[in-house]
Image (cartoon, rainbow, N blue to C red; front, side, top):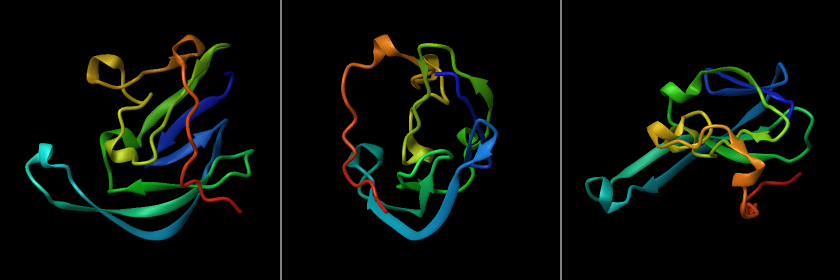
Length: 122
C-alpha cells in the first residue's frame, strides 16, 4: 500500500526506482498437453531484487509481451499489486479480471500465505 508501481520494457519500477535484474542463464520446460501437446519452451532467466529489499528471486522472460509495459499506478491504503515470476505467462495484477487477470488486489482478497519455495537468497 502506498507504493507506486510501473513496468517499462519488462523491468519493474517501484517508487520510481528500477528493480535490479542480473542475467542467470536460460530456463527450459515442457508445455502441458492442454496447449497442443508436449513442446519445449525456453526463456531467459534473471535474478531480480526490488528496490528497498534484500531478497532476490528468479524471473523468466520470453521477450516482449503486452504486459512488459504498465503505466505508473499508486496503490491505495488496502491495495496490493501481484506479479508472477514467469511474467510472460502470468495472469497477475497487470491484467484486469475481465481479461482473466487479478487486477489490483485488496487485503480482503488475500486468504493464503505465498510459499517462497525456490527463492534465491544471498
